[in-house]
Length: 281
Image 1 (cartoon, rainbow, N blue to C red):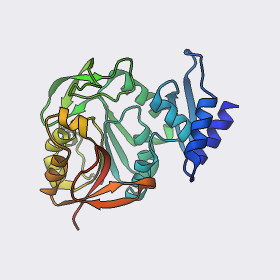
Image 2 (cartoon, rainbow, N blue to C red):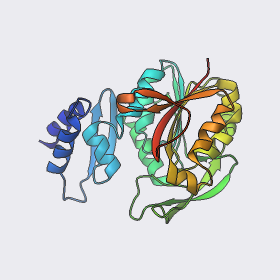
Image 3 (cartoon, helix red, strand yellow):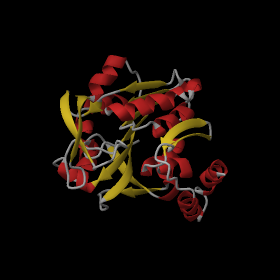
Image 4 (cartoon, rainbow, N blue to C red):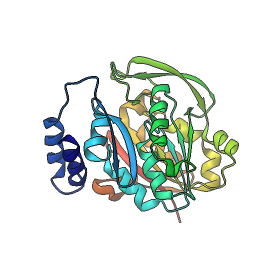
């Protein structure tokens, strides 16, 4: 019965009012079996394994995606044969959607530094063998310089929503990670084109951009960036600094709204927002 309800809720979430039905079904089928929380499901051509005891895993299982708006943006802006980069890949949800969009002639280069999360990502790749030649998973974090760094998270949280910069909400030391720069990694891979980059690294966005100057100048990719004011401040900068940095390379900016709708902006006024940065024509 749960599988039938989950299949239904994934369809309903994308229609008006569907969110409330999804929430009802999610709570109706809440499991008390802590040893049986893994779920594997297929939806719209991809297969995912998630942990429904975690907020992110439950959202993906019942909704079909943790957040649909970025998926809608991906589907609008990415084409067959493109190269997509996923920085902060987590368990691979976005990378899998990207692989589905670019097809077997495209590439998805994904960065995820956390040991446990990277293992989950690799398992999800293995569940999608038709795209095996598309993926290039790399177990590293990105910044403006190579090195080693500590990651911090929430108590009892192992979903990979961690940050290089401790805050009041992310104060638990999780693990040490290896850092590189996007420019260095793409040069090592011999990448010849990049059309789209998704960036979600919990406060290290500006540092990643500073380590991607050559990539920006050479390829002028489209960017989709999650901006969290608290995480940015912990990282030593303001959200507006992200826009100012990319503005120097000739980009314009759009706030992502419901169902992936875009609204042009020049400044960041929200404490949490997803934006798209597009190179000027």
